Image (cartoon, rainbow, N blue to C red):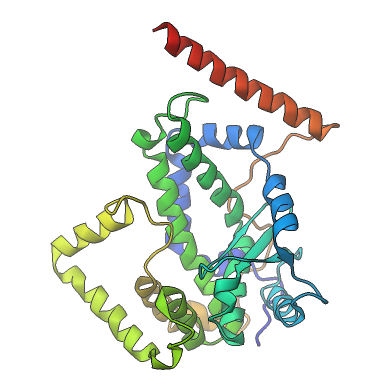
Length: 323
């Protein structure tokens, strides 16, 4: 497998990812979200949950997966080794979060349907997210969407985020970020069919009937999906499907779209040059930087923040009662 010593995430980051992040950061409300996210939200609770309710992968726990993981870290030149967990969950999925202590979670449902080559592609994809600095923005997106939908205008001035377009910008960025991570998977595996096969598996391959699924047919399906754009009405339907047309907004591009983007890049001069070793070298990694104020007593700081949040909520409830 190829190893890309010193490679920068900018060497493979998809331009749509870059553009979507710039658009997100320019939307009114982003700075508020960034400041409140740092003030009230820490990655530690989720890490503690995973430590208590999943299996941490290591040399003596899921050893073959850990060996594969270490190879991917080396090949993509990820500076600090993230923590890898396996969670008992039938959903065929994986994800990465965390800034100070990045981690990746593989669901058991995923492990039950992928082979070793596809698992390498999945691990490289998640490491690509970390390499690009996506997790911190992703956590901000999850938090912002949760606050906006749960308490609306009750506190912290977040109730108008949906109308301001910030939530839509977060979703658009999350979808485009997947395209960069897909490129990381291709770089590490050096096998386009393998990465596309992993996408097909995530889309709907059954472990029991896997032998009856054809990648060639899935590629043809992708081409047919692309051809739907010849009808302008279909383009409208696609936009609506991504942005809440079925009751929820989508965090990932459709797999058939992702393989189209990846097939184009696999034949590009940019990809060929990276394979030859001609790529942008790392200076600093990360798609977004949010300064975290240090505290001598982290527990007391967190308690003060919780108390402040509770006071804000109580004040809003009190004012609503008076009106």
